[in-house]
Amino acid sequence: MSEKLLEIKDLHVVYETDEATVYAVNGLDLVVNKGETLGLVGETGAGKTTTALSIMKLLPDRIGLIKNGRIQFEEHDITKLSEADMRLVRGNSMSMIFQDPMTSLNPVLTIGYQIYEVLELHNNKMSKAQISAKVDEILKLVGLPPERKNEYPHQFSGGMKQRVVIAIALACEPKLLLADEPTTALDVTIQAQVLELMKGLKDKFNMAMILITHDLGVVAQTCDKVAIMYAGEIIELGSVKDIFESADHHPYTVGLFGSIPDMTKKTRRLNPIEGLMPDPTNLPKGCVFHARCPKCMEICKTKKPQSVTKNDHMIRCHLFKYA
Amino acid sequence: MFKYISKRLLMMIPVLIGVAFIIFTIMDFTPGDPARLILGEYAAQEDIDALREEMGLNENFFVRFGTYVKGAVTGDFGKSYRNNLPVSNEVGSRLPTTLKLTFLGMTLAVFIGIPIGVLSAVKQYTIIDNVTLIAALLLTSIPGFWLGLMMILFFSLRLDLLPATGIDSMKHFIMPSITLAAGTMATLIRMTRSTMLEVIRQDYIRTAKAKGGNEKRIIFIHALRNALLPVITLVGVNFGILLGGAVVIEAVFAIPGLGTLMIGAVRAKDTPVLIATVTCIALIGGLITLIVDILYIFIDPRIKSQYVKGSR
Image (cartoon, rainbow over all chains, first blue to last red; front, side, top):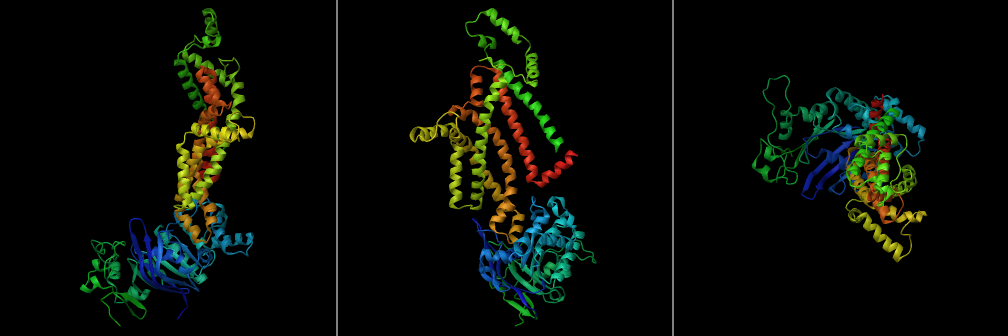
């Protein structure tokens, strides 16, 4: 059994706005081992990004609140860490790649400085020249010519900007990388390059990664474990093999896979999951998925299903009762 | 860069001629004969006719304007109708005072307004934010001349701390520049606050936080420069407003600057002086706008690259 790096227990996160309280993450349990890649999959609004931001403790000020739960990262419980201590962790042993490379870089600072900064923050002992050399090295690593480090973000293409963002995230060789849809804003060829790059770097530094994505193809290619999220809960969790090949699935997972068009068959229409995700300000009683579930039973409408685990493959649904 | 600046300077020529033309036209339509103004109410009709002929006042309107512009280009702005002194001397001697007042006012507004704006954005919804909001509202709502008068009443008459009129020392400039700065300062506070708040919500600020930088670093290195871009435009625009505001403030504090000169010229239908003062203010306004546009290049690299392309 490999060593635990991150363990989330019963995490509840809400966004409190003037109009309503949004229940974004509701009782999430998750373990990420050292060097492991976990795919976090789910539709928009499932709470994937919120989960990542909670781990980084970067939830929006005054609005996003961790209501309950523990986030154990190495020896710290992040939920209890002070802001000053958290700053030492952020960008250093844990870092994040954001969704949109176009807006994630500061337009008035050179990309070289933006990489330099993170190194400067976490390496007190290094001299300026050493840090500069390291910046060059990192740029080469992500496939950018170091001569361009004095240029500004607007002088780079989208794929190159994402490489800069990756360079910033990897500069201090973090133990955990949170990649929030790192390829969503990029076109398919660049997507493949960036994923390949991330995979290579992950192996090089032996870091763990949580990859947030909608793209099941990406998950199959890059992940060891997959967690399917729905309305702030993980409804199915297992190895890539479990999720892609096992016979037992949560009905939502079935729907998710069903909505991918099959290239080999002739179909007239796509097969989406009917309906929409429940309103996060007013979650339904019982199973969060019951309103859209094709296999909904009476019990689903009243009682919340417990998680059922078989050989590390967890499903949270009343259809399954192994225990 | 050089090409851009010369282009902008050349573009100011039609603006200045336009301003001169408007004032010239307005003054031409107002009743009153300049020759009679110069010679006085009791002058003989023959003398007046002779002077009209000499000044070319009998010529067609456009010919007169043409003659004026021709003179102005060679540095001859005519002579004041009131005291027969060359206008350029008159404007030249008063311009430094107005410029000093305007720059002092602007410096005050910038160096107080922007930091307070940043502070109130960083401390959004706290007591500091609310107090600055109220202060800014007060400052914008108070008319400059009233504020000036109240300050004279309080600091000069009651406390006898500051002189009410004149320009003899820096002390004399304290109240006028505060009065002048008030409105602009309030605008800058509000503008800086709102642009700061907008910038703080940007993705790149989240990236900066994710690097583990502290709040000071995030505000000063990452947010401020981005937030200042619209604020600088506002500073440029407000320079014109301050120059205009100086006219009123100079009257309140009896400061011998362009403003008092201008008001005197309007009262006496002193056309050459009026055209010269208004055009002079327009020229300064234009130059400030140009300086602001050049400043942009140093703050925003995106604009720099656009303009390198444009000037090639």
